[in-house]
Image 1 (spheres, rainbow, N blue to C red):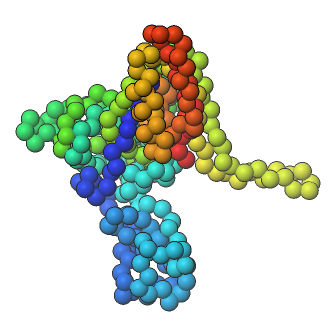
Image 2 (cartoon, one colour):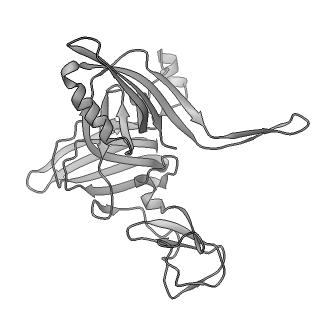
Image 3 (cartoon, rainbow, N blue to C red):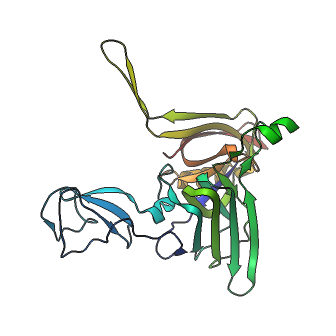
Length: 298
């Protein structure tokens, strides 16, 4: 079980993107906005706001208490960096983003992706390109024979975790998401990974569905589509000598979403979220067991 502890991607880490930030006009203090007008704030917050009243002048959306402005979402460019996985950055055929973290980064994860390939290039100011890999997002799950290989519909993986980036600080990391139609990504997370131990067979995967189902007096059911969150329960075996480190790592993440990787090379067992609870059981002097219940972000 590996955990990617995320680096906050803010204006200092963000370097460039080919996704324009022109969803709406930027908010201006001297402009009067009507009820329902939308604006963007492109410094610090990178959010879209909607005016809640007419004659809205001089009310800063970032400090308003909801009287004048309602926060709608991140801008299209920044949806991939907020904590809402099902809100995607979308652009035709390709998204190219460059990031530069002052701290060491050796891992990245891409969640809720629509892509044919994802390219990651790491460039150090002194040593030049130190990593350049392209990952095919075609899924071969369920392909059992040659007939299925040639005639079954092509299915794309919607997430990817990488834990082999060279550990450089201040390196330039360029990510290119390629697609045949719209390129989409719900979350890009990068940071350093911690290894908690060896995940055991028997992990369970499920979802928490936030759709609503209502039944009227005639028994007719109306289903309103809503978001959902992934859920995973997994047991991990670790050396008893490492329980202090595991407890400290998990305690430090009690209020911080992270990427949980139950098994290398199996992107189906990747969740971006937080643990609901964990239990460390000292099985014997050399081997202990960690039980985790993880809930993904919507």
